[in-house]
Length: 525
Length: 101
Image (spheres, each protein chain N blue to C red):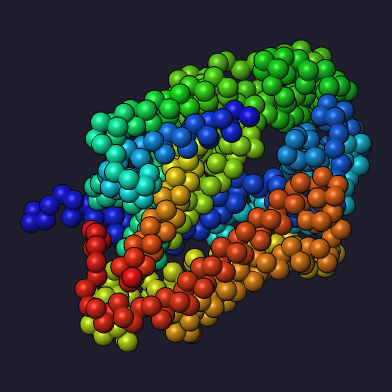
């Protein structure tokens, strides 16, 4: 080996980071937004304002399901919480003999209810949960492929983080060395500082991200011990076991007392979901699960009750060490337990990660631009990376802004409305890619970032024109969600506007630096 | 409330650590400190960060507090850095003006 360890790690860092950099940028962006997925969903369904008592609303939802879906195989009720005032219900229709499994249309087996069990008419949207799902399921492709792809990207991220720590040798000495507006040096500093400051977060989030899908990526442990993987899940999680219907009709016990019992069982923690299997049959069971906001561990404890007597059937054995560890790791990743303070810290750390990946991608081109044999006509690889950078860093945020705008502008009764909101995101993202390819690189940066800023700035305006909840009414009536959302949009718009201005100025400032020839302060690539 | 306290303690801790570094003293403190003061500042900064961890764990629960402490350290370090950057930029323009005169 001719090169030293640090050089080889620097090489690994450069290429491991670049290869999946764009996907990682998209994962960081949507994952960061997903820390506010409930709030985004509420903003995207401005019609829903109801708040209600948890137990009463759950009972009302059960009455609604009893009335509309008495024959369903199972019901799932998610009671109102501090972050979502509505009741969400899902049901699994009973399988007919010989019926082939098919994908159901959205809304066909789910409903949003108010506290009295009445369906709420809200615009059709996937809300913040789309950004959450995109984070690991992507879109327009089979979920299973997406999850493998995302897993490989996360492995590369882990490699890039560890090799990056080796490459960046002076973590503690250079801790406070970030300086702005110094060409290549400042890109490098921005990359280093965002990387170093939230390093514990990136290690945690990447590793625990892999752990969330560990049984998909490493199925052999289960395969070696169980003939069927389902057996493992049935044993690991209470309430999963398949029970045969008896065919004997029996009324369901009221849910509220069971929720109270379960809550006592969880040490006073609130109930997060109620699942009823075989409602109306004498084999009915009711599984009550702890709210994920009550503890870091995400695999909420569950209590299974008999649906006809209300007696506890299975209170769930305390999880083993491995299961408890996995549960805490997933909880740390998703951050559902976090209060407002910690949620914002998660968001800021995620934002840091997005900037780290983005600045790393830009750094790849910045470092190579000086060494190009003919800067006017760079080679194909350089052009490819440069254009993809613009498409990713300006394009995806522009797409997300378009997603929010589409939510306000598409007609409420439109067929496939929720899907078209998502198509709007990808149309704008794709258009940005085309723009990045068609325009000179520096112009494309300025125009792309400026367009993104304009799109984000227009969200509060369009919102104020189409919906009667906005920044002003929010301030007057204490509707803080709409105040915070508008302010966040304006802050993003301002950040992209500053970036666009810097990109425009960089054009003038770059000429003398190139004339000077060498670059100062070269760090390992 | 605990969040605010922990954030302030973390800012204080990182400010001490930054002031302890000889290369940043001119910008951050305004003058060079003698090495002994620097060492005291470093020890003090680390102690304050440890107190912040204790406060977070006492106020928010052990596991929750430890996670929140990591997040607060990230933000506090970033804030100290921005302060240092502005001080550095001011100082260098002042020096440049003096050079011109």
